[in-house]
Image 1 (spheres, rainbow, N blue to C red):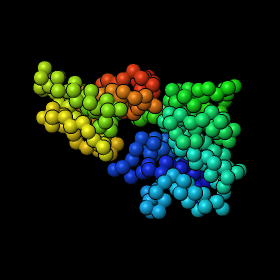
Image 2 (cartoon, one colour):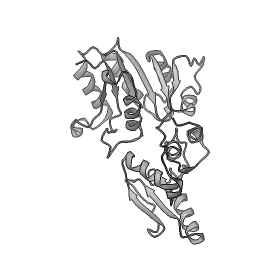
Image 3 (cartoon, rainbow, N blue to C red):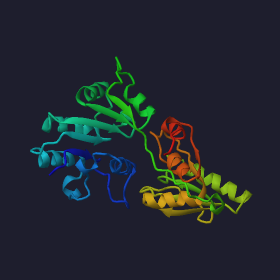
Image 4 (cartoon, rainbow, N blue to C red):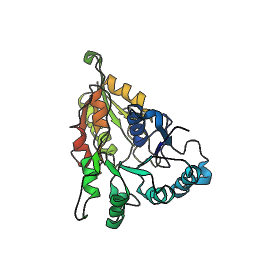
Length: 282
């Protein structure tokens, strides 16, 4: 096998476009543009018996035992600092890159100061998808050294052949349909706006396993989860996209993806969401 760069996705992330989350999309987008793409192998749980693994520890140990005799130059861990202990144990001479997609203070293996100091000591590179995540990682850490860290946010190629005159009067909500994402606020605003101007369509793209917000279907059209390529088509057809999270989003793809399709993003001014509006598309 000529693959010597391994990328490890979190246990629950999938490469299947029908189930892919933000981390998987990030990995696929960056990998296809890498000059080393022919040397990269992406590890996920898609082809594994999840009933036997069922949790992160079993998943990473399974990987380590399977590939312990392979010569791997670089292992890239995404959003699971708890994997670092096992990778370091089984692959002591391999370079390790750890990429944070969420608040480090909410992830097992990087919550405590000593855990983050251990990450600094044992990783060749630490990458954050936003400055806000980087600041959270180094909070309360003494003698901060950013030399082996980078910020690499989400990105997407800009589509230029979009006719603004053919845009539909759609206002999109693209996220999990819960209160943390601000779905209840979106639904309330939609209900009020519909009375003012019924010509606009409010469309919610996403799902929620423990859903407890049920808007009037005549006001908000819930169309369920859509793979990323389909979401981009909705952006291309629509006027406005709303990302009004009430929790601290680590970055948020909505402003980046919507603006790439000439769809006006309206977002909360918090945490990484504020940064996303400043990211240029190429």
